[in-house]
Length: 293
Image (cartoon, rainbow, N blue to C red; front, side, top):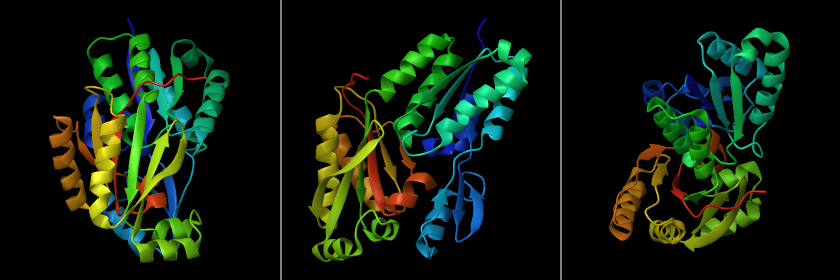
């Protein structure tokens, strides 16, 4: 009989209480702010991090999760009788965490051969961020709780990862300027014109899809893009930083135009807000499934 466990990292933005309820292990992403080290999900709440980010004199930096940390999780799971550990990581193109997990697998097999013989590790690169893979892990855990086999759980997860898209709108260009993603002159002109970029994130890549003019046009634009890309009857989420009002407007407008509400409204964690700033709203959607190479 299979005993399945789900393992992921805090960039998935899965709330800790929900992870605990479903038996999902969350590994904290390390980050540094003004020379001080923190662990996401342990040393601050999302709201506290937004405030810290606004006060920060430099762009905080995230680090990969150490292979030793993953090795400890692998050994613990095997000791608990887990037969199939499904490990879904933050996008490998944006973090070395996936590479650390590969190293941990090799260490697990070489250092703990008896434990390794009794547990299969299924390592998946999410190619996404936030609930772009958080949803897949949650659904996978629910399926496992319901008695699904590992191959069914993995099929559900990969099905979502092959179809998810994110539309993220920034209400400020300050953090893009600080990080060097936008030249300071372009950011200055953009702010003067009131330009608000909407970023499309899919399969590990991201690009500015549109630039809308003025705050009042952000919600309608995100709604339009979300509605156009959403699969018929597809699941969608709303993610937000420190801006509650636009998120509420987006929720109401999407519910009206799509015909059903989002599966949830959650906060974007540190890993995403570091690059976008905390003044953001986003949708994470189930679009059309894309063929993978």
